[in-house]
Length: 307
Length: 255
Image (cartoon, rainbow over all chains, first blue to last red):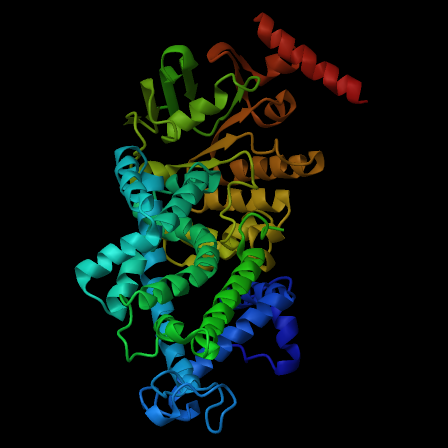
């Protein structure tokens, strides 16, 4: 067993021309990607906002000055900067800052659940269709087309009405309506790779279709899906907020950002902050995900990472 | 028993107006330990013969026998076939997975063939193709064209095959690197007793590597001749003479 390198040689170890182990090769390639990502200031800004969101979600109970549900009708509609209420209060006298912090948990929860379902489903459907071809391809892609033919929010509304309102069902509905574009991307990528010599080469080693798809095609499709997911994340948060706004997502007392806007819209003219502050939060997080997506595209895009 | 026995092979792509009779009644027999060359201009169907042989072109008619085992049309080949017959592709930039290190490429191949002692075998393979262990954990984009082709050759040697199919293995490389790769292939054939079926449009390459050549034109075999006769320019068919002429002219013109 070789000893671990000391901190002064970490850089040398990571940038070595001839890596000496699998671990080193993988670490070196991750390090190079990180270097390229770090060169992009806007992406780092996006990452910083995302880090803040994660910290806010984790430490919400410690950071929030009040319970997100505690009503105090005497303190209703206080403007930002009021005594004890940094971002003001809403129509029921609830502290907006506290609700925003707890709402970060809901936003992250939505994002994580959608990420676990939609791209995975899309990857499966797309790569199977692309690699198998023929009748399998036709059937899977027509199903995809049917899903694509409906506007996303309308389809999500239909799903939520069928499944019942609630945050989990909203997420499920968003995921079920979000996978078709991923399937299309994965299929297109698969089609470009399935005729490549390196796929022929593994086939000539006797590899079966399952192994080729999972070990040789998936790693090539994942980067473009990751990029697309981060760019779509803004849309996902907005759709979730939209469902919340329409009363089909999070139920009323829950501090979901879309529901907060919906609650504040009645007072928009005389108490602008009630709807605007959660709106700004949604805007900041959506923008952060978009910036990260742009940076990741530069790092991960298989078309130019070969250089 | 020949290493490769192809009789009356026909390959047709497309239907109706798009119909392209790519290979017409080609009959080839490659003996064990022999190095056999298929020559022809691009589109003459020479690569298609190799691709039909390994199953990359699934639809053909005729007979193909490899080491006495009859092959059927279709993409499937037996496990023994995959071990015994390996292929080196034309473009080393396209034949290696862009996100797999040399180590991953060779490990995957060895595992697929169920071979033990992967680490030691990879070291041996890299030595055999003239790449040191220092190249083991590099990605293809960190290698030159010649080095990539050496990795592709190492992959082809991994299951200890008896037959190597070489599809223009040097045409995507610089002239100086071409010679290195050809010498490597020649050395490996002598050391390991391999049988080569090589496809090329370059008569110089074929003349250097092969003991017998077959000339193809428009999908049909027009002539088969030994390399001595080729070097003495004793071709009987017009097309072969034309090929030899133009090869000579390009050599003289280059000087």
